[in-house]
Amino acid sequence: MDFNESLRRAIKTGKVFLGQNSTEECVNAGKAQLVVIAQNCPAAFKEVLLAREDVSSYVFDGSGMQLGKACGRPHVVSALAIVEPGESDILSIKRA
Image: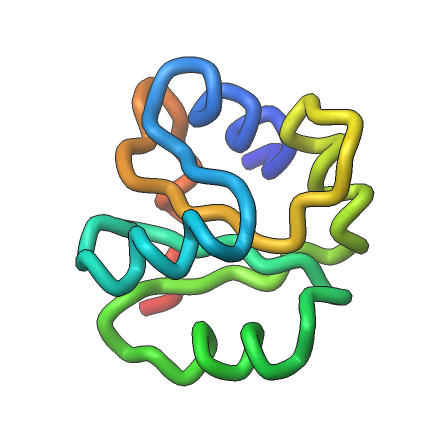
């Protein structure tokens, strides 16, 4: 699976929320199927997300700027929530 391609397909055909605030809202509402976190996401926020057992998380191997670029956005994206994957296979990276 090519993560960047799967992410772009999920953004295009599914329901994905970008940014810490939107990600936190989706997780708290129980809507997020997968959370993607940039390596340089603020430590406190990252720890809270990784500690949650009710949502799968994936740490992106790159900075928030690189994650933004992978999303097709010209700005930093430190975290995002996948609510619906659409035609993407991105949920296959979920931890068991």
